[in-house]
Amino acid sequence: MDYLYSFIVRNFVLLCVSVVLGVTLIRHRKSNKSVRLWLFLIIGLALTIAVLESVQLVALEVAKSAMAATVLASILYVLRPLCIVLFIFLSGQEFKGVWIPLLVVPMALNVIACLFPFFEPTAHFSFYYSGVDSVYWNEGDILIFRYMPHLVSAFYLILLLIRTFSLVKKRHFLDATSLLVCAVVVCLATIIETFFNEHGDVYLLSSSIGISAAFYHLFLYERASSSDALTGLFDRSTYFDDMGKMRKDITGIIQLDMNGLKYLNDTYGHLEGDNGLLTIAKAIKKFETSNMYSYRTGGDEFIILVVGDKEDAIKKFVASFNEELKATHYYCSVGYAARKDDGTTVEELLKESEKLMYKDKAEFYKKANIERRKVGYIEE
Image (tube, rainbow, N blue to C red; front, side, top):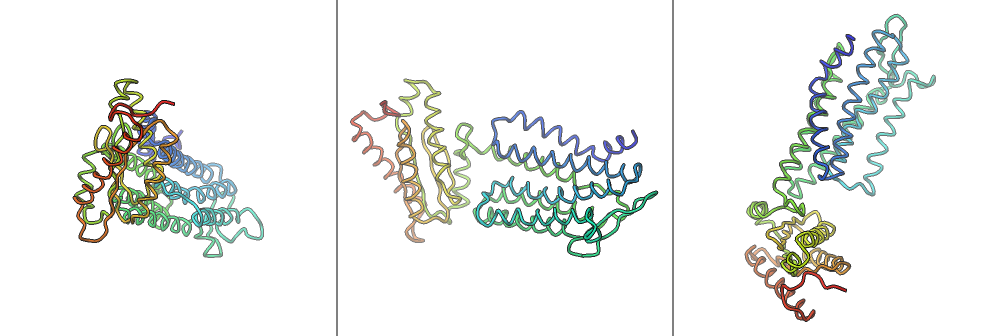
């Protein structure tokens, strides 16, 4: 009972954060499923670490079992670097090519190092517990194996920082800042527990992980307030805000306008109109590059600000987007303009893209031989 009381007191903050965040994630079932999954895993991992630390304390002080303490220490040394890996996945990074071995190989080496204490030839390489009446911690004989969990954690932290810098490069400053805060908090907790914990009575990592996850969820909730509720694209106010911030860096503008939204709403109901808007938004998200920022600026109006990509990338997006919509019943007029030189102003890009968009709309209605604004899709 004393150890249960000690567990609750030591992890009170983590337990409260876990309950509140868990309830919030369950309530927000319609939010990004991938993000919700990683947040659930992070909280679950934090709770697992907290429980195992308490069980290890019982193994040391009550059971006085060197083997049990060693097993628990090995598991904890595997789970702690995994915390940072989960935050890397939470960042939304796509892991292909070289990213796969960069994530898998260090963790595999760490697992191998944590297995050394259980085999006679390597028993003293990394770490081990010994003793009968009292169980003592013993440092391993080989430095690199002794600090393998810390080296792996540091390596994953570098990967997370690389992800953070890539977000900064793409001007996702808030995303980068939130991830950096999470990484720093977890890293500091790990350092304090490892190097400033002479008596073994400092337990910061689990609570730090839970607080970081809650902070990131709070950030996502705040960011959602700048998004269009239906499509998930950025909203009109965010468009004007970003236009002011990125004016000098914009290399192109794409304007899109759904054909016949009013007819869809009046004839088939607003649910069908919403479905058309969602179809267009999904196509935009599917083909936009990391340098494109998409906004729903009106009922049937969309704008994409391009920062860094050249005209070839814009043309590729437009071609892919149009091809995607051909498989649906919905139609959207598209116009774009790319900056030719530094003398081209944003206002000129807006005018040119809007002009081409309306030209595309006029050609669509002429080719379909139908009255403008009468249809949003053509029935088979």
